[in-house]
Every structure is written in C-alpha cells, then in structure tokens.
Length: 137
Length: 137
DNA sequence: AAAGTAATGCAACAATGTTTCATATGCAAC
DNA sequence: GTTGCATATGAAACATTGTTGCATTACTTT
Image (tube, rainbow over the protein chains, first blue to last red):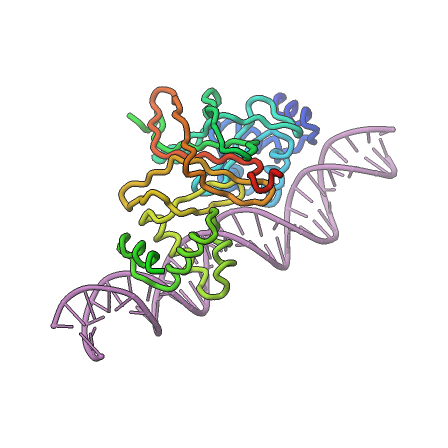
C-alpha cells in the first residue's frame, strides 16, 4: 500500500486510485498482462482510455516494460528500477502454451549474440514458448 | 513466377492470384510484413479479409512465420522449408528503429539458453532492436 | 483557500481482426 | 473440353483494440 505510493512518487507521478490499482494488479498477478487483462481485472472501475494512458505513462517512466507475445503486446513490472532515461531488460520471457501465462525469468539473461558487421543492437527481447513447470507435471 | 506456383503446390494450396501476389510481395520486399503492409502493397486488389485468410493459411502450411514486434505482429518467409508438421525457426530478427524495417538474420542463430528446472522450451523468438547497417552510416 | 497543473471520463473516431454466407474459382475426374 | 465438387473469395456486419480532443475533476503548490 504505502509501497505503491512510494513507487509512484519516485517516478514523479501523482498518486491516483487508477495507478495504484494498476500497479497492485501487476504486483499481485506477477505474470505479464495485456491491456485486456487489466480491463478484466479492474472491472468497470476505470475508463478503457485511462488504463491505456496509465500503461503508456508507466512505460515512459520505466515502471513496466513491454513483453512481446505471439498474440499481442503485454506488459510486466520492471524489477531492477528502470528510469525514464535508461531501461535495462536483458532477461528472458517465457510463455506457457498450456496455461497461457507469460512470465519474466528475471535471473535468466539473454546470452551474448554476435551480429554481422554494421548492426548496432540496443534492445533485446527473447520470448521462449513451451510448457511451464506448473503445467509440466 | 513458376516458382510461386510450385511453392503453393508443394504445400497443397490452390493457385490463386491473391496467394501468388502475397507470396511474391514477401519475396520482393524481403523484410517482415504486417497485414497492413500487405494491404498497402497490394492496393485494392483484394479484400482485407482475403489477405487475413491468406496469411493464416500460409502460417498453418509453414510458408511464413510470425515475427514478434514491439508494435504488432509481422510475418516473414520461412527459408528452410517448414511444413505443416514442424516449424524450425531459431534465427534472430532485427528491427531497425530508424528505418523501421524488421528482417530475419537467417544465419544468426539464437544461442543455447539454460532454463530453470521444469521449463520445457519449444519455440524461440528473439527480436533485437537497434540500428541496421543501411541506417548506420 | 486559490491557482495552476495534471489525470480522468466521455464521445467520437480509427485501425485491426473475425464471422457468416452467397458467389466465384481452381482442380480433378470424366 | 465439360462437369461437379471442394475450396477460396468478396461483401457486409460485427467485435476488439487503440487513439484523439475536450470538458470536468482532482491533486499540488503557494
């Protein structure tokens, strides 16, 4: 609760119930969420547009990052505090084709890649699809 | 020309002008294309729905594969003939933030990744964003 | 408490993707 | 070549997703 407000304040964002709710949804759900997921989780509490804008703001401020998915965009919390200036995301995303959840594997880093001459890499996004431990019984 | 028909026939698809045009657009453009890109390239020749269905069919038959992108889905030709049964895509996709093009780096393979216990990886999709040789002058 | 700034809700719109069904087309068999 | 069948297409309608402008509301600073 108090932690949420602190996170918002650190990123120079006003405390509003929508932002608190969106942020706490990310924290409690743990996995990557699409705009639709949030709309479902928050019910009729907020206008669709407000949720879109909240996501956009959080993205810009470095509170969440994009997670590429084969059926649309999702978002997940940044763990190591990212800032407006620099984002650091070199971890792997895993999508389970059984339960459909996509999660950040914070401790699994994307390995070094050798690119041909002339390519200047800046951001990396690795999605691995398969079966997660929960569904792999 | 004849090659297009052969490709379609190999995958048990009827030869239609739409399929020929979509396929030849992929071949000539070389980079990954979104549905909108194709709609733009093909003009008013075909109904939007038909292009959607063509993409879906090509995906299922293993003629093209999905390319994850931070602003939506794109598609690119499968180089090593994939089939309906098995797809093999372990190459890297590179998106240039200057010209906006996304390309398959067919020769750059995604390195081995060590996943925690219980994860069963099946498909890999690595998108690297940055500057491509053409824009990096 | 007042003023200024930022966030929200609403409406309208734009873009993207899907479904149904009648029609047209490709293809194989004759 | 013609016929018949299976499949692909176009059109309309709809569903979903994302964006923009503007008036109202709510936070913040003084």
